Amino acid sequence: MMCQMEVSRRILLALGLVLALATPTVLGQDAAASTQALEQVEVHLAKGAFGRAMASASRIEPEAARARQETLILYNARSYDAALDRALVAIDGGQGDELLLLNAVRASIWILDTEAAVHCQGLLEERLEVMTNGGAANLAWWTDQIVVLSDWVDGMVEQDAATDAVVGRARATTFGVFGVAVSVLFAVGFVSSRRS
Image (cartoon, rainbow, N blue to C red; front, side, top):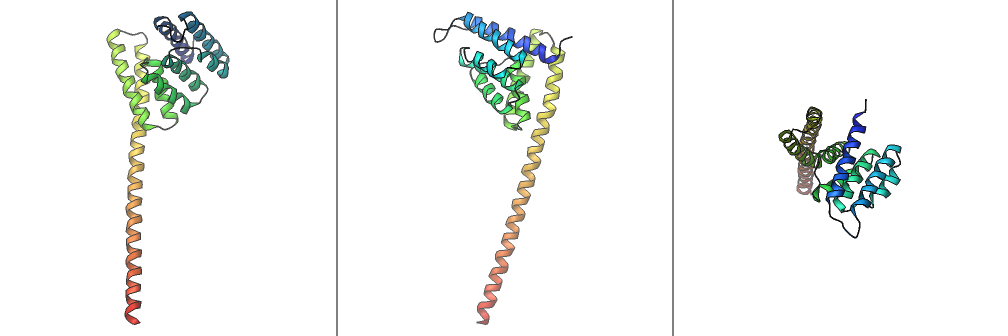
């Protein structure tokens, strides 16, 4: 029985291969070179050789497809901030498959980037609608993942709201104390000037 990570990696490789074959060549690279680079990324990822995987991914064109593969590598290397940055580049470049979006949401959660988490979660939910209408395989698994991630993202939003409320109260208290202090100083100064 394959673990979820292995299934995700295999699906990601297959999607990457399809993308590489369907994408027109850029900067003189052909689809075979991109396919070979994608295969090398998979081999290096399986070995945990993240540096070599990144080197192989650097040969993938176009930029959005490369950023997509780099997202997977960086996420697996637990470099969540960099993974999110590359995921956003891939998303801006038109990539939007469910595995990319899943890694983007997870990376956002790890680094507590609520804004990115909400954005990527919304894209992932839109993708689920497309998958539902298309009768995608593993739909139940994807639905479960999205529910779990939605709970995390909702918790982040609530935590941000609570933090903002505390900061707002602290500012109000600080201004109140400052106002009282200024009033006391003014009163002391006024009393001192009347005695003089």
